[in-house]
Image (cartoon, rainbow, N blue to C red):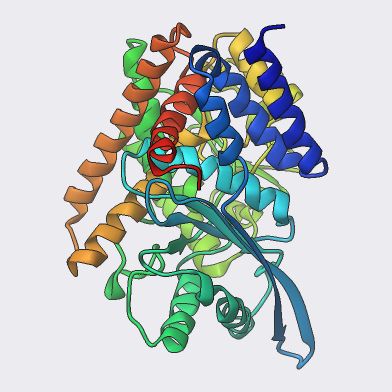
Length: 448
């Protein structure tokens, strides 16, 4: 074994020794490590940089007490992991979900580092959230929780320090409550959060950005392969913001969105969702906040499959847009058997490493999350720019910039993979391109 190979093995072992129980974080690190091995072999100084990068600059955990509608005390746990400020202020969303723990937040913050770098915007990386579950809670209870959460978080964020945004279960309502409490405590109206309402500092296209961006990325990949989205049958998981706008943009570009899902099952429109039907899904999930099965009362053609995943539906392309590790090895084999030729990740790390190996063994086009779903944080970065200017750009201007950013991400990922002899391995290319920009900044800024 060469000296470089020994050092690589030593660094990997040390990461696992430090955090042996952080399954999601270690999964994310392993996926990136494999891609970066050619970089480390060519220039070992980057291995030392990576060793620093995997250790967050700061990890914050705190108690979040609040009173529910019955007058009872509830206590949740809050987190903010500030991963890297090499390229700018920490930037990344807040997730409210019962599965949130330190491992989940660290994996998200680690992935965010590469994603934000790929956008070419000057943003560092962070992620946060809580094990609070807003489902079934009243608006007053959600407000009480958000105010308590921000009463601690506000000490650690700021427009030039750390700018959180939304993620799973953190939408316009939650961002509003969080911003209001920050403003009260800091006595400061500033762009400290993105995903804000348009009437007080938000950006046009921000709600649509992750879904639209994922479709733009798929469009670029298909174009590179001499193909297009027109007529492609697409299975989508999830029914939240990302899934909704993925379906909408697919429809606009001539593809056929077939499914939405939640944790209870999936709904299928055999000939594809129309815009009117997508609008109804948005009403059910964003306003009424009910399960996707309720959609069947609206549509005579819809079919609902309780306890199932949408991957069993025959399709050309898949857009996993729900949550991490929703596609395992067996799911990937089902996708391939059902004719899927491309998987584009709208959610964060929705495919296990074993699933990714299945894609590669069958030459399935793969758009990894850190590249394919970077549209959301890209438009968050554009929202930060608009806030700094005290201006609001037009819908067309933001959408054009988003489309260009996603094209650049695809092309830069492809170029990086080819530079290191990996042909068109977009997963490896995205990891390499994202890493090198952060690594160069870290080298220039010294051992800090």
